[in-house]
Amino acid sequence: MFTGDSCHDILESSLYTRYFQREDAALVRALAENYAKTGIFPKNEEELKPVLAGSGLTKEQLLDPWGHPYQFKFDQRSQYGDRTLIDSFAVYPNQPVVRTRVTPVTQQVAYISLQSAGPPQQQYPFEVSSFSRVLSPSANNSNVTNESPSSPAYRQV
Figure 1 (tube, rainbow, N blue to C red):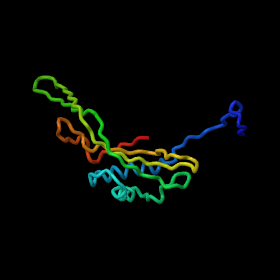
Figure 2: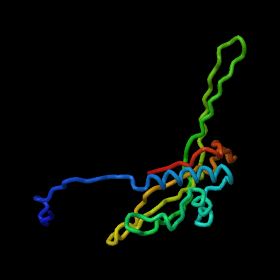
Figure 3: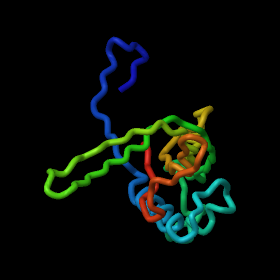
Figure 4: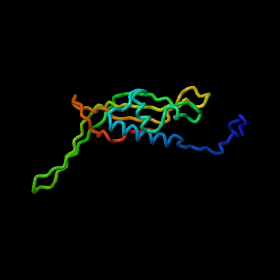
């Protein structure tokens, strides 16, 4: 019971659940499969349509707990990272030598943010899930892709 006097109010229980888990897994799988086939990570709603079709979901099915459709937001940013190459080689009869080379790279990363409008009184949307993929890491002004097209899309929660 809420009395309005915060020193007498207690929280009886709270429940945190991942209500978007099934849809999230379907989207991660569909994004990876679409990227493996086409080399495209969606940058807009039009490019997202075949991914949604591949996931077995439609925008009309993707409703938040308050009955509002989820909104997809697309972004692309640069970030700094490292490309690590590990070589192992041997000249007979010597022991193998392991060599690690780390090269700084600037990566172009695409992001998809899935947002909910929330309950009716909420003014700002909140992020339910996000997905990202490194599009083009480059070092020394040369584009080098260091991931296979079949690798899964990165997921952030």
